[in-house]
Length: 141
Image 1 (cartoon, rainbow, N blue to C red):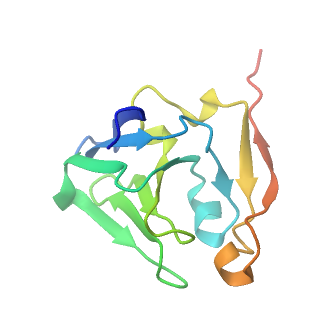
Image 2: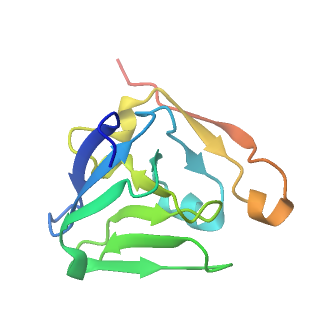
């Protein structure tokens, strides 16, 4: 991992899985997705660069899931069920990380999160990824 990246640690809910992630653009790449799996999972993710996710503990506790094209691989803790990260479909060298798994970070830290059109995925359409909307969090007074 490069020295100029934003280096963060994180893990699953039960603590069995621990990892380190290098975010090249900090939280500038946060997003949600409208594909069937992401819609149900509901996670806010941030992008890591190639080689940017390194497991520190719990590799044996990680399980994975693939669907549709089978290209993307979604990882979660087999003990507590929390989704930690996934290998991206649009570029399998890249990973997305669940911001809720990063130490000291909450998806509610972001007032607005771009939502990407995963229903019409770029790998299916050949078109650039399109934004589907924005998810907003407005704290109660």
